[in-house]
Image (cartoon, rainbow, N blue to C red; front, side):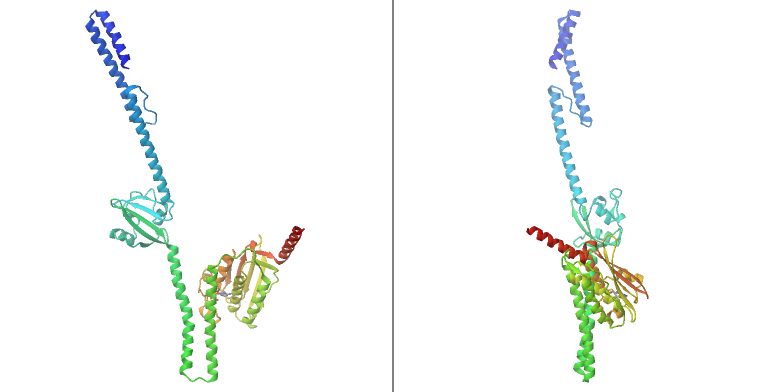
Length: 446
Ligand code: ADP
């Protein structure tokens, strides 16, 4: 460029000297011309670089030679480095935020004025917030639960706060951590299930204690009577019979509790252990006849010729519970029937039908709760523990099936056990299957 300007100055100088004939004027104008041209070209290059810098720098910097080119190149490199590290930082931030977004806990960041800086979807759901619209809003204007507002104001976050869920009847556990300069991190955890199962556990222990205490109180009363009063042989016998009844009641309760505990703790029943339904019904019918003592018309043994895949003791317990309930809750002269049918799709349905007391609609959804009884005194009088249907439901769930209840007060009830097709087969199928297996084995021997 300098060479070009010098050449330009020289040409101008020669032209001026030729025109005027004055040597020094030609020299002066030539030098000035050269310098002006150089400054002009410099200004153009500088302007180009500044225009590029003012823009978004998406294109390359002007590729000039010399000093401006070098400056442009260096600046472009610095700009590209900066862009790269900004992009990296943004990506890391996005990954970090999506990790927090994926957290099962609610995360909410508050600035020193308690305004929402950021929150994930779980927190938005917990506190009934809109993650976009509610940004920069004061949290206490949006979450107005007095306990929450007071908790934030106290500044004492050693213990978590347990609070009703903003969107529903659930329960949240809220922890606040302070960070940075006056910033706060609010973590929320849905503890509805935990609170519910703790309440259930408490209720369960209270119920069991109550159920055991009653016969124990009666027993200790009898023991005291036998100690302190001279009883005749007949009275003694009567007291012993009553004591025996109470002991039996406790034994049944403990047996049902153990069954429940076993159901909860053991693995799912294998899908390939087949139990003959007719054999089960034979045993159940024998017990039911004893329980009924001839007071009911019983039809408990349909010829099903079916096998069910599962655990024999559990299936026996589920069906027996329904049949004994039907007998216990059906007044004398009533009828109890067991029916079996194959449903469309191969599911099997065992129904226990009675013409007994029936159950009013509002009780039906709660019947499978532990210790839930419609008529407590009838249940106890007939040796009930309040756990029978809960055991039935558990057994059916474990076998992939379902318990369905229909009932009309005063007319009777229908308890249906639906078994999935995979756990139902005709007994003759199994014989064929065994024969086929035998033939296959025989063939492979040859
Ligand atoms: P329980 O040991 O009290 O019979 P269950 O769990 O077997 O306990 O049954 C729960 C309640 O459901 C019973 O207390 C009874 O009120 C009602 N119930 C169960 N089966 C029948 C039935 N076949 N007819 C009328 N009521 C029934």
